[in-house]
Image 1 (spheres, rainbow over the protein chains, first blue to last red):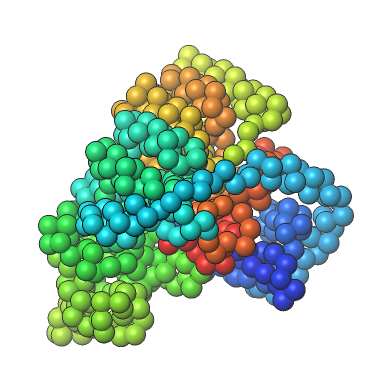
Image 2: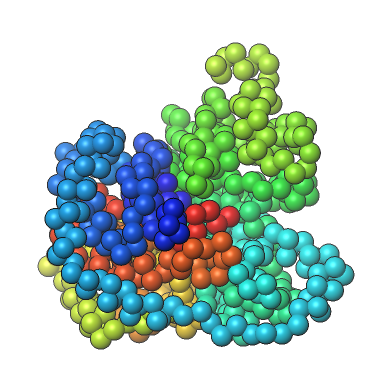
Length: 378
Length: 178
């Protein structure tokens, strides 16, 4: 998400192999979605704080205070231009850099000691490998919810807070306590919350995975859907939020239960659906492979669809398909899009996003609106 | 993970004490909602459609089991038994009562947590790659840099009234985590 933040800091190496940051400024979603502008290809790590302070300082002086909808730094960058704002940042950085005098580096060195890696265990993983081959339920979960760890005996576990039909991102107090216990028993007492609103156990030895999985299933936390259709980001919408113009959570719940009933989501494969209940875009619909934006049309909820959005380092804002859909039409509309994808993909390895990039909006518009409707929608 | 210094501890406790007094003045009517609004927003307390909402910062998405249990305790004691994790790695409680807000902030301070700068035109909680320190393709762990940014941005006098909110994300890996 470094391209959709006010400042995104993406670690890279320079030609000499030294670590530094690509500094990306002025990205953001909301009413005016913009992919950030790279103002520095390589910032030495030691210059992080004075440089970030320079960006804030320029923005604080230059940013608009006359209109709150034009006050974010993305507008400042857009109105000032990349060359001019880069020059202003660099000038301010030159002033600030000597003032830090290395104090920040002493603090950083001290902080680093708090983030030493845990004492990784060295133990056989053969039993895990055999269990993976023998148990299809475990294998299904492992295939979606585990990620590669730097230590080959370990795995990164994502605990899904997206059980089909539940509110995405909610955890009950019992689930929180169970997760805390499991982190202590199997996860070196480390927990993370992900941008995708799931909980991560970053360090689990593979030999512990079968028993961890069984405990998660027992607590209703064993859903094997990370990165799949039902791993949806949805804003709170009209169920909670005073700004919302439509419901988001029930749409997410119905999509998840609908495709679970059809048993299609593992076949569809990697897919990011993101739902916002108003133009402020807290559900990040602009960067969903399928984005859904709920609006109010004369007192009736109406859902616009965007396709092809991407929130990773290849960030793209999704394209609008055409006229929106009523609340009870949105789930069938998404099914038409995904049936079209299944029919046109070259092979099961071609993801929805790859297929979309190959064929464009056309076939999906036809699937949504029909051949005649497409003319009206154009 | 990072543990509060004496400075961090004293700062967070002083903000709890300050907000406790502000809530008392709101409840006895000596502060109007218009006067109280900027004060509560400095402590992450929003007024939503049906109730207040408290957004608690989870610095760069990192929690200890002890902190997770305290969030469960808060959900049971002062909310409806659940919490909502957000896309910026925070947690929101959707049903707190205003008179309980100081006690909730006190319970958060007991486990080195707070709701400061989760609202308002300030530098918000810095988000980081959730696979930090574990993923195979990482150049360096982003969490120490995120913690440095947290310390620098918290209560930074120059940046408490920015034109608008300000969000920073950091990743130690050139490839975004899935």
